[in-house]
Image (cartoon, rainbow, N blue to C red; front, side, top):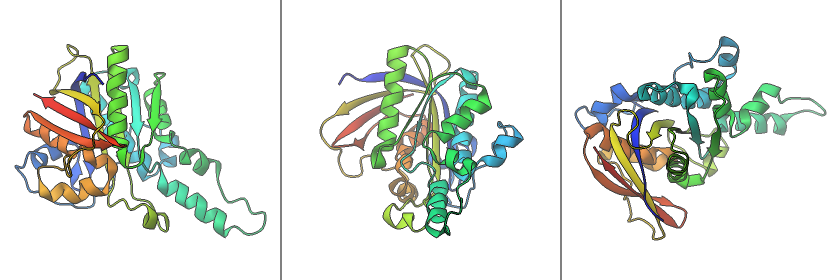
Amino acid sequence: MSALTAGIIGVSIWGPGLEGWAASQPILAGAVPYEAKSSPPPTPAILASTERRRTGPVVRLALAVAHEAALASGLPPGSLCSVFGSSNGDGVVVGGILEALATAQGDERVVSPTAFHNSVHNAAAGYWSIATASQQPATCLGCHDWTWAAMLLKAMADVAADGEPVLLCGYDYPLPTPLAALRPTTAAFGVGLVLAPLGMGSPVATIQVAYATKAPALGAWAPRNTALHALAAGNPVAQSLRLLETLALGTADQHAVAYLDGRLDIEVRP
């Protein structure tokens, strides 16, 4: 396929010891040692109190990175088309529903409407639309271990096709037991980017992506900082860490991430 090009005009991150872009930038640039401490996602202040009470940690993680990236872009958050991606979805809610159904007695009704609507894969995008009063389209996808590559390719294609900026929001959160035994996710991690056509906004870097049919070399997506390898290997969305390191350093880079039986080649230029 032909390469797709866009400017990155907004960046965000949230993960263990990576609490927002400003705090994480020196860590990702190698100026400050990485410490994998507990970092619960913040309460989403952009939601009204009624909706805020209904959110769990997975939605809070998604909204944290979506909001930070949108603010960094300088564009009205509600004006942005979006692509939300997660390999697990809200496993906390889904696990709770399955547990309730498995232990229900007789005709007992154990699943609340709130739990049910929070369980669907587009729940985070829905809360984002409510919070920002957005009427823009949102794509919500999951692609197992290839989720980061799939959502990045989709967002880049949208920028190329529509000539409009796109908010990219990726997030994955550990599943509860017993689901975690079949789908281990080591830590919560979220990333946000606002991608725009060249010439729009003030890009921190230019990104170019292209799909290729050959699988990438082993570890081609690995972060430079070996302390981040466990996080990148244990959370599909954290495969974005190599890109985020490059943005923090302000340098050029080429790397690849696996996508199904092929790969996505990624080139970044300051």
